[in-house]
Length: 115
Image (cartoon, rainbow, N blue to C red; front, side, top):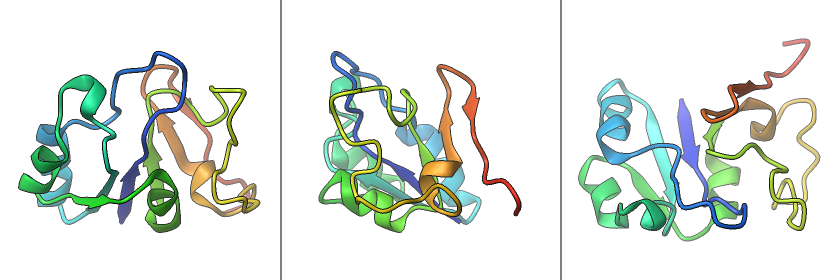
């Protein structure tokens, strides 16, 4: 499964939803983990920390959306009202990764219906 960690967009949010030690366990379990460049900076994690445990660091947030089956975010999509919910501009309301966002701070789990 392709797991993704985009950068957070909520004002003042410094946390990252997936830290390298946990990402390493997911990689060891056979998952592909993609992280947007700079996603961990606010929490003290460098891109090299993610690469060292087997994650792929992608150039930007949009690339993570394109690749991921499941997203890990601190703030659920739409938490920053002045930004686009889905930066790819694609309607993912029925089958895309924005319907599979896991937000650990709000226990927000919205899985696709009818699948």
